[in-house]
Structure formats: structure tokens, C-alpha cells
Image (tube, rainbow, N blue to C red; front, side, top):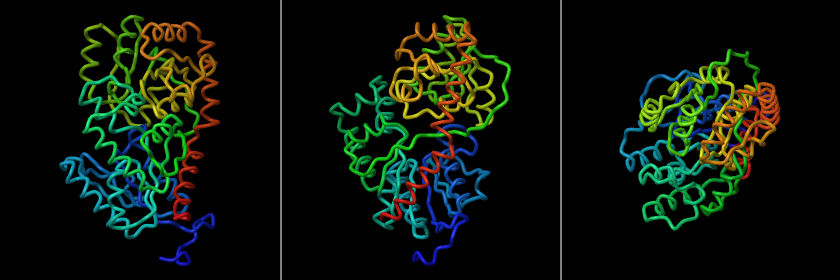
Length: 384
């Protein structure tokens, strides 16, 4: 279809037909999983036509399905078959679109371009090769160390496949400078663009504080949640952990063994996460790796004093003793003392929270960040 055949959107811009591809797409869960539906809604609101292809664990109806065409592929298909099948499905859908945005499934999009050539933009939020290595080997190696070492044959093959795929994209975006730097180590030659995550700049009503601290996270080893459980026991704190993952049973057993007052809230909807954040005196993120934490930004929007580990993804957002507290990675004593400080200094805690809100409003409002991604997607078409 030629440019002259396109319809004009509400702002006078030519409508593009965009295929969004995602590895995760639950209907109403907070965090990275909601990014594609949020971007889809933003594109639709700006006059563009959108369709979405995503992996799913089931084929239940999705509340967003009426706003755009939604194609579901079962995650239970054996991986080699699934990669090829998804690539074919993407190519089939790409016949009737102008460009592709991939939040995951980068290999499948790269393969699909051999069948139907369309300009494509990728968003990278982490290193799946590192995650698989850590989970399989029970290793504690950091994401930076893993990117620099001479990896084993299996990891080299996976890294090569991922790097080859990302080099097929017109532009590769990432939510943090630390992740942009990792992409360079992976020998990604495609243009790289920093587009940070964002969250709604709404004002929520204050809630009665029930927990001393809360975290919102996938329950995986590099989130260091066992340290938070230990701190709950040592400091006699009431802690809430929102999220699910492979560490759930181990963490529950640890809390029982330590006699720690930890509420495991499981996977919550976005609205429920906001409610639980409002019940905590402070927010904790002591991960060994973060691109840019959605939950951290959400907590900052809720005016929560934030306690974070001194990794680059956190210190790019939190300045020690200004809008939160930065502690050494892996230090239980520093975590205990920081939570105690926030509890016993309500005025300081309030000041941290107010400054956190200012930081979040200034840099991480959702609409501004979605506008940046929409611009990157549309420019990829114009520059094809």
C-alpha cells in the first residue's frame, strides 16, 4: 500500500499498521508484562492500527482483545517447533502491517523477516541467556560477569543466536544505560536507543501502613529475597512480598524456619499492587540486576521511601539520602539498619518519598516514555 493510500489519524499523521510481538502478556498483571498492552492502547489512541501476537499459558479471553486483534500461541509447544511456528505466524500477520515491534521473541521476528520483510524495532529488558545459565547451573554469576567470560558451548550458541537476531532490527531499545552497555558487549551493531520505563503519574489516596517494607518482584534468585526474609526475622519487621516465581516455596520454607513475619501475596493485578504499595512504610529492591524496575518507579510515584542495592539499574534512579537509601549489594546488616531508620524517622521517610515522587514525575511518566517508543517505531518505518 502506498503512502497516499494511508488514512490520516486524529493529529494529521498517517496511520501505520503495527504488529506488536511479545513473549508475555497476562491480562491484568503489573510490571513488564503490561508493557505491550499499554503500548498497543497508546498507538490506538494516536490513530494507528494494531495487532498483537503473544505466547500464552492458556487461551482464555483477554479484556483487551476488543481493542486490537490478538493472536495467541501456546507456550507448551516444544521449543524448536514453537520458534519456527511463531516465526511463520509472525510472517503471516506481517503481510498486512507496515512494521513490527518486538518485546521478546526476537529470534522469531528475525527468522520471519526471511519470509516477509518489514522494518522492526526491538525492546530488550534483560539477558535470557544469562537467566537460563543461572537457573540451570544454580550459579550466582552477575549479568555483567557472564557477558564478559568465555562462555560454554551451549551459552555461546544461544548468545550467537540472540545477537544475530537483534542485528536484524532497525533499532534496539533498552530501558537503562547499563543494558545498552551490555548490548555493545553482545556485539549488537544495530542502532541502540535508551527509552526508560514509565508508570502512570496518578495521585493515589493514602492507606493505613500495615507493613514495615514491601517488595514487588519475580521470585527468582537474583532478586535476593532470601536476604529480605532474613532481615524480617532479625529486625522483627512485617514484610510483604508481591509476586510469584520458582523461589516461592523455598522462600516460604525459609520464612517458617526463621519465624519471619512475611506475607507472600503472590501475583497481583496492577490495581492490587498499588493498594499493597500504599500499605508499606518503605519499598525494597535489593536485586543483583535490574534494567529499570517498573515496581521501583511505581513505589516512587506512591511517595514511598525506597531502599535499593547499589547496582547501576537502581543508582540511576535513587540517590542515597535524597529520594531513598542505597545499600551495599548483599548486606543484610545494611538492609536491617535502613528499614529501622525509615521506621524510626517518619519525617525523613516522608522527605524521601516526596523527593522520589518528584524524580518519578520528572523522568518516568508513562505517557512521555510511550511517546518516545512510538516515535522510535514510526521513525524505523520512515528510515527503512
